[in-house]
Length: 113
Length: 109
View 1: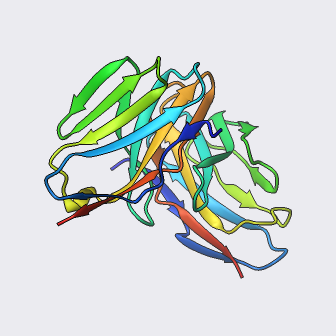
View 2 (view 1 turned 180 degrees about the vertical axis):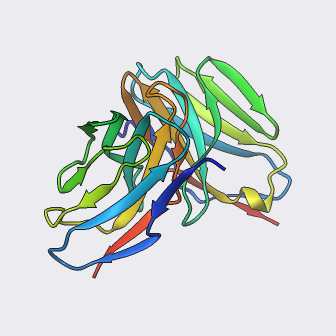
């Protein structure tokens, strides 16, 4: 079955540590996205990529980095520069940037300890 | 003013009733509108989209759009306890997708 796989499901980060969240899709989708979800706020876009080897900053890119070396993979690194990283992180994809509707992964819940 | 406004709820309805979820948006350039359902601790899943004024029906779900009033709604007929979730209203304009905070729906058996 096609879908998006995010791992790990839960992740704990110590102060000053970089962590990487994995996102893999086998839907053959061109566009991939990273969103952050906090209580009482709508999903906010961190980064997106419409094609391999190209990505763009979203609304809240500071403290995050991404890569898109393969069509299937779009990992997100939360760096120590992100001062408030505790959140639910969602990876999504679309068949093309204009295609209606996202397919979301199951999410990674990141907590700073 | 938020770009996409939703009442966070909770909205409580008895089983079998019609649940009405509402959303207003500020960007008149918004072209298409989506409703996602998100169960607690899970990821959102797309249940409806609409881009023309009027109603669009799919099973127990009806999406309604009024671009003049910048208003979009989702009706759930014969509500079931399994419909209890948070419903996210999402707009897509020119190169921008905006999520509302979601309305929490509780269907009481």
